[in-house]
Amino acid sequence: MIREFPLKEDIDLENQPSEAIQTNDIPILECNSAFDTHIDQNKCTLREIAEYIENPNITDSKEKNGLWCFGECLDPEKGHQKSNIVNKSKFFILDYDSGYTIEEFCEEYKDYFFFLYTSFSHTKEHHKFRVIMYGNHEAPLNDDEQYAILSECFRNADRTTLQPNRIFYKPAHKEGAEYRFKFNVGKQFPLYNEAITFLVTKRKVDKAKEEAQDRAFATYHRKKRDVDCLNCPSVKNYLNTSYPNTTGNGDSNLNLYKAIFCCIKYGDDNALAVVEAKAKNEHWTTSELRQKEEAARRAL
Image (tube, rainbow, N blue to C red; front, top):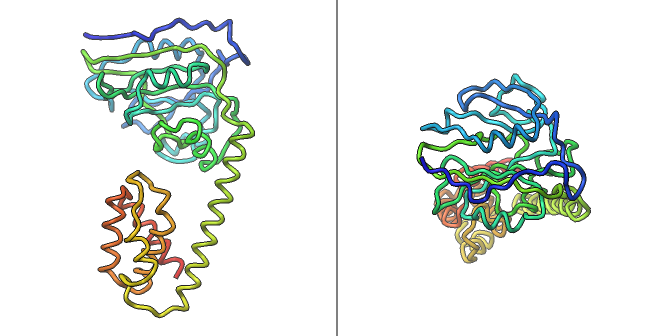
């Protein structure tokens, strides 16, 4: 069995450089496996979290492993796959699997308190890991606010794991696979400050402006009776503009919606197929395109 601990450090719980990290009565939600929808609400200590990480489960399948997150369960009957079950805690978990390395994370966040452990599919060539951090804000936030804050503070984290209801696999690895962890002493992470508050407010304003633009565009097209969608300015503008090849491409968001709206309004399935083929090449997903189609139909 190969188990490497090149980043291991001991935890000094008595000498924190900022506000004391909570060490006892930490609210934790646990379930036995991905197949078990029942959630247990427990309390743990910081030392117990460290022991979980230092002694990972060895298994042939991650689905057999337990899951956890931190906070209080608002509705145990909903099961761990449902939304709106977790009340916020100062402890939160982040997932990294997009090529950002353990060393890069440790250097970027070296001043802050965190636990780090590699996830089940981690390899030496492709680092995949989870991080438990301690923030300065525990009051409930809605999903949009939490997403805005975490995505801004941790830009390399997996965006699909920033929702409040997300729970994560506990430390585990296959027999013989590399497993790494780190305990880093530091200050609490400033999740909620003036800069982040401004960011959240700005995104709300931007969303309101975009919705107003969509409504104005819909009103304009209700009065038009054009038919040839491939020659419609909205469709031509989208098809003739190159956008960065990134997931959830925000730069093309409004123009793509306008093109889809035009095609839906005039029932031009051929033009719609051309528009969506270009969108998929820019990493828009089928689900995202269906959502835009539905939004266009609701606006008509």
